[in-house]
Length: 170
Image (cartoon, rainbow, N blue to C red):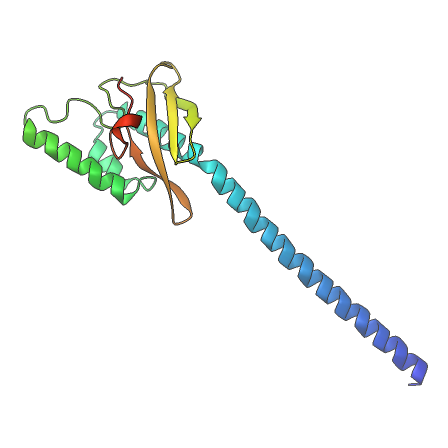
C-alpha cells in the first residue's frame, strides 16, 4: 500500500468512528427522551387511576354476591394503607353495632351511588381527585392517590384516609 491509500483508509476509519459516536449519542438521547415521555404520561395518570378504581368498584357493587372486603383486599390499584384503614373502619362499626355494622358504604360515603359510574370533576396538586356521577352529577367522591412503585394507586376514597374537610356528605 502506498502512502495515499493509507491516508484514505485512515480517513475512512475516522468517518466510521464518527458515525458510531454519532449513532451512540443519538441512541442515548432518544432513550432519555423516551424516559421523559413516560414520566409525562405517568404524571397525567392520576385521574385515570382514580376513575378506573371508582368505576370498577361501582360495577362490582352492582353485581350479585359482591363482597367489598374481598374486592378491596385483592385489588392492586389500592395501597396497603387504604386496605388497613378500610378494615379498621368496618371492624369498629361492627363492634359498635354488630347487627348493622357500617350503615353506609365508606368509599361512596353514602348508601346509594350513581350506578352508571363516574367522570372526572377536578384535581388538586396534593394528589386528590374529585369524581362525579355520570347520571347523578351532584354526587361526588374525593379520591386520594399516591405514587408507589412507579404506579398511581388509590390511598383514600370517601371517608377512608380523606381528611374531614375534604370529605363530601351526600
